[in-house]
Image (cartoon, rainbow, N blue to C red):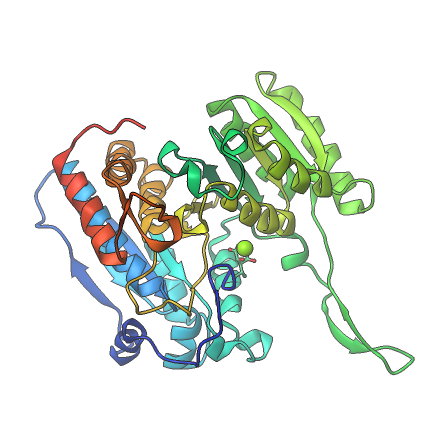
Length: 405
Ligand code: IPM
Ligand code: MG
């Protein structure tokens, strides 16, 4: 993730936004974001700005969230907590206990990004990424929804030919708390020949497959009714069980058309003919890879939001892009993925569909008005920075102009 937006390796430099995070005391603070009115719904949101461009995009998305909420009678209390490199610098661990406690108490979480050159050589347990994996595990957010939609306004930003990219609208449902990311045994040891060996375990229990498959069938049912399960059942036992369980569940969803595809073929089909896909369900590592691939079809990884959901507790909402340390603190980041993650937070995390729609529409209006950050810029459009793009979306949230795609 962190590498996805990096274009070069600049000297390690602490961006201004990051210094601001560092300077603040660790004591969590609450910001009352709307004048409390009786009758309004109130939610507690934990903000996890993280590293690199994370603080820039989260502060913009927070304003948009607040504004869209206030127009729909929804108020928020925001609490900002450290994670990733920011937490390492502050307290020496990538996910402090206090962050976990705040996360569990909240109604939903909005995360920016984690990681940066500064911590790249840290031992694994002291890497920013470890904080992200730990919070996913702590919140048990096993279902990761990663939509990839090619907006008509951005079709020319895709690296694929217009006729291939146009109209793509797919959803990757990625299993997020199991598989090789978490499987035991794992480690690096020295074998009998004195040679170092690194090893991990791809492991899925039946209940883990069933619960993610159910989320995927339900998701497909609300979309175009097509579900493609991606695995490597020609080689891996974990995938053989995956295919067996997904197939067995299909009879409960007769309205969903299920197909199976090997992951290597899926990677190829995604660039050959992405329109064949509606909903894709897959394991943790294949989902990581395929969702990055799918994001490029849409023109920029800077456009894609995600939702990580558990059975009951709060959901975690984050852009799928990384911390982009090469552009951090320069007002160049595209805030739209985080703004759209705020829309997913409203929709999937809080059930506030109207406020979510306001944000989605506002993003379309800003794009229709020609505003583009560098990653989605094309001739004839207006190049803006992160802040200005945020302001344009805010204006559109306010103006309530119905957006047509
Ligand atoms: C993602 C990222 C993470 C992952 C990294 C940063 C641990 O790539 O969210 O896709 O591999 O899940
Ligand atoms: Mg990734």
